[in-house]
Amino acid sequence: MEFFYTFQLMILIVDSGSTKSDWLAVDNNGNKLMEKVRTKGLNPAILTEKKLTKIIKKSKALKSNSDKVTHVFFYGAGCGTEKPRQLLKTVLEGIFANAAIEVNEDTLAAVYATINTPEEAAVVCIMGTGSNCSYYDGEQLHQRVNSLGYTLMDDASGNYYGKQLIRDYYFNRMPENVKLAFGAKYNMDSDFIKYNLYKQPNPNAYLASFAEFMFLQKDSEYTINLIKEGIRVFARNMIFQYKEELETVPVHFAGSIAFFAQKEIREVAEEMGFTVGNFERRPIDGLVPFHTKDL
Image 1 (cartoon, rainbow, N blue to C red):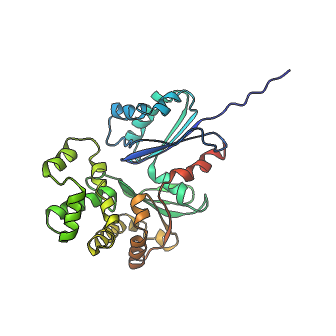
Image 2: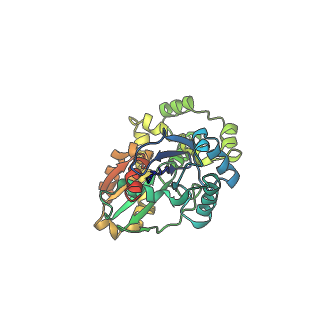
Image 3: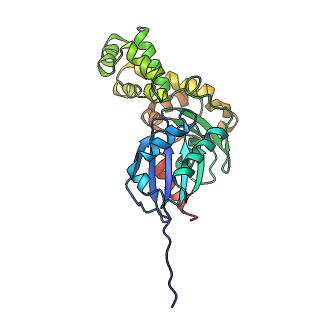
């Protein structure tokens, strides 16, 4: 008598920004094996190996299932270059010892989640805590700007807008009613702000926490202009790196900032002459069929 055993795969799909990471555990048919897990963001360009490990192990669900995991497909901010990508892979291999590990930049997750067909060419942008933009030719991802992180780049991201809001508050460039609302919502004590920016981890995520204010003040001309000017800067610096491709392909967007600024993005696109495609707030859900179809 022969016995046949079905070995169940446990596939972890991770979409990580600098602020938060979402973890989905599914089997090879795409069935959910546990509730979605959320941890702090795992940006290896900013965090140390010790800190990355601590964040993951803090999740009881991930820790208790670590030996059962067979595959990890990780997409994250800060994973666009080899050194931080390898750092994170080493961390994941140390925790999920029985799993095959893949670490890719977050833009690739945005591509898979926003394109209409696997072979579709498109310019794909991320606007979340950070920002990025790439061209996908239907097979490969092309990056024409190496990111230098939130201090020098990340236009139209959460941390970009947070920085602009704080500066406008302190330089008295906000309308009085907006300034009063902003000061009422956030602790604007200068020592508190400097402590979070220079003494605490993840200053980019701290800056991004202010960006929500724009979408609570969408009736203000000040905030509409702020949002649109950030998109214009992003388009000039990032989207128009692919000026030739823009003649024939759409521009897709992923991330919370883009999702809530759809109207402003469409208006800037019409003004600047590029075609807007799809919006996806959370790319992770679109990654499940992509990673289970061949397993």
